[in-house]
Image (cartoon, rainbow, N blue to C red; front, side, top):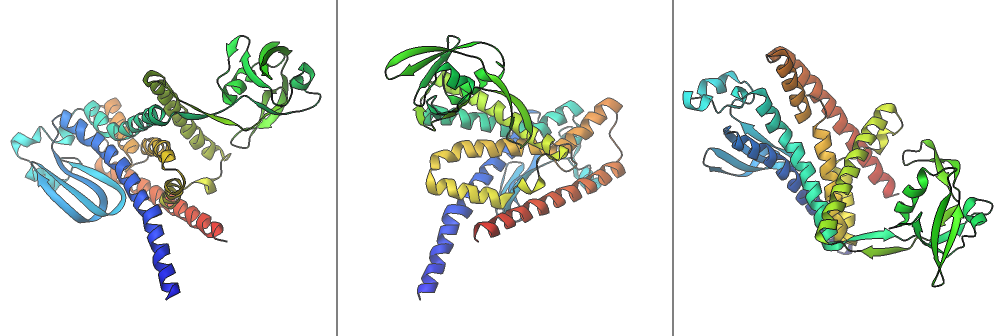
Length: 375
């Protein structure tokens, strides 16, 4: 009986903390993505036949006007089906003369590009809104500039900086946090800097000249950077923003994660980042569950980051992804005519194979992580 009770408890925890939050988070991001396609299609008066969350057989569906809205069993995506989208011969026969001008394939290429690009763009807009909202509601945790350790014979030690000092400004410019301090020092190798330090209630000014050193970045690459020989005390303080400041921070955070996501993709192709680090739905579900269990407030910026990843991934020029269709449409704009159906079908088969291979890889990585975490 105890074993049976434990089984139901663990199953309930799995559903409540992992499966349900994952389905809600992914469903929300997919809804925003597909809403982007839907709204821009409607804006250009393109007839939308279906709006679906999920794939496979329908759980529920309803016809509203000219569009069927449905929820399906496989919650790993969604789709918007527009009239004339697939150049289907059977579909073309059913198009009435009055609807023909509303078909997707009858629109100018630039309008079709806008409709296709709207999905990923809406994911990036979602991330921006979530980041701004998070900063407005919760503010941010900022690492203070308190010094935790000073290395002997390096510039900070020679300048008289001590453990417990709080660095308040550099060259007269206020320091907002430890990351801000690092960026101020980064390009100052061999240059004289003036630092204001708060020590036991008093302000002390010191002169310091950063030295060049070799260190590793977040990708494990050896790079040259400036150092003065101090380590953070690891203390954090809560910072709150007014609406304008929160919006500014939201834009900065969104741009930061867009750049980082693109950089990771580049590093993957360069071989700097291992494909073993890639994660898929199981990892997202696991991370979502952990955040819900520990601090649901962290879920908002996490969803923003995943939304950026989803948006950037869909812009890859791989057939069957939005980026692949955009690539075909750009070719059509340049050539003045669309690629032949045979060439597009071949490209789509290749793209589908690549996508399946990627899905297998990320599921394999996810399963390995889960297996190792249970050992």
